[in-house]
Amino acid sequence: MRQILIILAITLLAAEFLALRLPRRLHLPPQQQVETINPLVGVHTRLSGVGEEAYIQQTLAQVREMGAGWVVELFPWSYVQPRSRYGFDWIGADMIVRHAQRQGLTMVARLDIVPEWARPPGTTDRYLDPEHYADYADYVAAFAERYRPYGVRHLIIWNEPNLSFEWGERPPDPGAYTALLKVVYPRVKAVVPDAIIIAGGLSPGQSIGDGTVRLDDMHYLASLYDAGAAPFFDMWAVHAYGGQMPPDTPPAPEQVNFRRIERVLVLMDRSGDAGKPMIITEGGWNDHPRWSAAVRPADRIRWTIAAYEQARDYPWLVAVCFWQFSTPFATRSYPDNWNFVAPDGTPRVIFLAVQRYARGWE
Image (tube, rainbow, N blue to C red):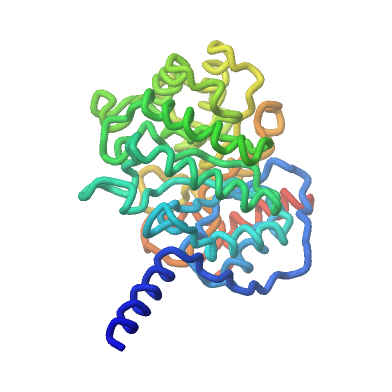
């Protein structure tokens, strides 16, 4: 009897370790569609890890009601494969993707955050070494294959790899990131040929710490082309933060402003990649009353709407997804003032102003 109990316990543990978690029944609303005068309007949401379906549905419905047709959302690898490379837990991702589809939104999936089993002990969850590039590529391919039937084609490979923090507290390495793209791209295209592989948006600005903390975004991009990255991404993500300047401020090497994206375009053209589209996956203005880098609320409103409208003059830009729509918690500091909606779902004035613009109510 004791042996039978041991075998049964081992079997149950193995099943828990290897088997997929059963999908949760979702309470999906009727199919909706976005009403907007500007199809480029988008936002970056913060829904992964929430797990509360009512909150997710409410947030994505508010995105649609604001007149935004695009959302960027992070889907951490560590959430989907927390224990090993065997098996996937899609419950959280299913909830977000299915509700986004029902709201008529175009989902842009940012894919990063490394599980513990795929990195050396003592490293951060942004540390990915070549030994696990294939494991990460398998995750991206599985994500693409699962969610293509729900309209998801846009896949961002990593985030701000020119920052030491986002590259696992190591000096930024364009060659290593290019090597990652070269592993991911063919793996995904083999299962979802029309997937759009997006190179991760860079932290905008000049080098910090001689490039060991942040490598200048233009230098990093040029190095990617030198390393042969061009055939291994279909679109380039950019982070277009406005700083304390209006969106029509001309671009300059030493300035971080909205039109810095035009410098990216010039560099891509000079590198033989003219015509490849771009997408803004982060950006915008902060209106915290006591943060030194913030702007006045009235300026944030005017400049946000002006930027959405200005983007319509960029034929190479597919969407403008500003940071960030809302969070389920308050920090009681300046990060709260990126939000369009308060944690309890109350629309802020910036939401109402963008809604009037995007829905054509003014």
